[in-house]
Image (cartoon, rainbow over all chains, first blue to last red; front, side):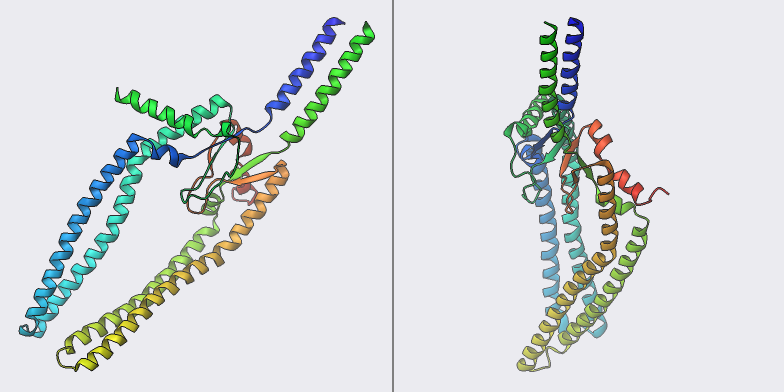
Amino acid sequence: MKQHFIFSALLWIFLFTIEAQAQVKIGYMNPSVVLSQLDEVAFVDQQIEQLVQQRDTELMSKANQLQQDFVAYEEARSMLNEEARIIREEDLLARDQQLQEERENYLNEITQKRAQLLQPIIEKMDQVMAEVAQEKGLDLILNEATSYGDAIVFFSAEELNITQEVLSRMITSGNDSEN
Amino acid sequence: MRTLRIAVILFLSIVLNLQAQAQSSNSELKIGYVNPQSILANMPEMRAVQQRLQNFTARKQQELSTLEQDFQGQVAEYQQKIGVISAEAQQQEEARLGQLQQELLQAQEVAEQELAQRRDELVGPLLEQIGSAIEAVAQKQGLSYVLNTTTSSGDMIILYASEDFRAKFDITQSVMEELGMFN
C-alpha cells in the first residue's frame, strides 16, 4: 500500500512536470546593440570608410576632369566645325553617363562589401545565440526591434533579454581568438 | 491509517490536477510561425506574375527613354542656337526646358507608382490565398498565434527557433501543402 501511495504521488509529479515543460519559453535580443559594441564591427566600418574615401576621391577627380573638358569645349566650340562639335559632345555625354553609372555602382559595391565583411561576425552571433538559447531552454528568440528602430517586443521580463549575454560571449570569444 | 493515505492521495490528486489544468490552459497557447515571402517566391503563379511585371517595367522604361531622348534633343537644339537668339528668347527657352525636365521627373515617379500598383494587383490575390491557407493550417494544428518570420524590409522577427520547436511549429511547409504546391 505504501509503495502504491509513493507510486501515485510520483506519477502525478511526473505528469505535472511534463505539463509544465510543455510551455513555450520565448526570449528576445537586439542584434544591432550587439553588433554596435563589437571591435570587429568597428574594424569593418573603418575598412568601409577607407573604401568610401578612396572611391570618393576617384569619382571627384573624374568629375573635375569632365568639368574641365566641358569648359574647354565651350571655349573652343565656335572654332569647331559641325562634325567636330558632334564628336566632342557625344564624348562628353558618354563620359557623363559613365560617371553616373559608376556613382550608382559605387553605392552597391559599398553595401555588398559591408555585408560580405559582416557575414562571419553575424554567423558567429547566430551560433552564440543558439548556445544561449539551448542553455536557457528557450524555444524561440524574437528580435527586439527592426533595423529601422520599430519595436517588435514592447515589453517583457528583463531576464528573457539575452542581448548582454550574447554580447559578453562574443567579446570573450573575440578576445580568445586574438590571443 | 488507510483512510488517511487515501485522503492524502485524493488531496494530492486534486491539487496537482488543478495545477495541471492551470498549466494546461497556459500551454494551450500554441505559437506557430511562417515565412510567407518564401511561400510566395515558390508559388508556380509567381513566374507568370514576374514575367508580367518585367514586361510592364520594360514598356515603362521604353516610354521614359523616348521622353528623355526627346528632352535631350531639345536641349541640344537649344545649345546650338544659343549664340544667335536674344536674351529674352533664351530665358523663355530655358524656362520651357526646365518645365519639360520637371515633367520628365514626374513621369518617372508616376511610372514607379504604377509599377507598385501593378505588383499589388497581381500579388495581392496570391497573398490572400496564402493568408487563407495559414488560417486553415492554424486551425487544424490548434495554434493560437502564427507569427511572421520576417518583415517586408527583410528584418528578421524570429531570430532563433529550437530544433524541436521548428519541427512542430514552423508551418511554412504545411501551408505550402495546404496550397497544393507539392501535388
